[in-house]
Image 1 (cartoon, rainbow, N blue to C red):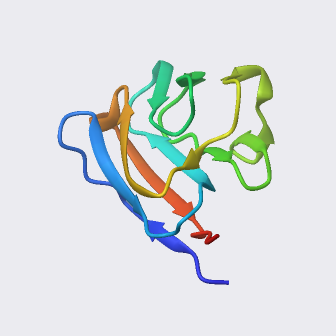
Image 2 (image 1 turned 120 degrees about the horizontal axis):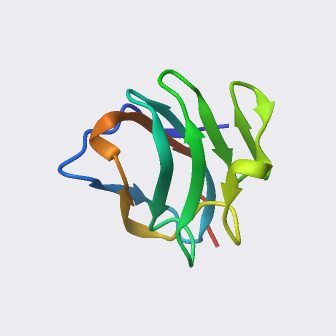
Length: 116
């Protein structure tokens, strides 16, 4: 299985682009490691409505896995801290993603392009 990884993401402000070279929307896995304590983290551009998570501490490893529909912090289920109507996915082409406190996080995006 060929996984397209974007790691680590370099932010210009709180936004970056991820390119899905596939021809169909594809679920993605987002990993966030905060460099400061974060009360609320918001991710836009990977779902119809923004995704939010809360109460992240320095060094926590937040994984929002759209492929397996799972949310963990430090390998512990964290659905109580997840606020989203759906799991993250990338549309074909360029995806402009905005992350609150983006410059204060280490972030990766992983996905397998899908084709119709």
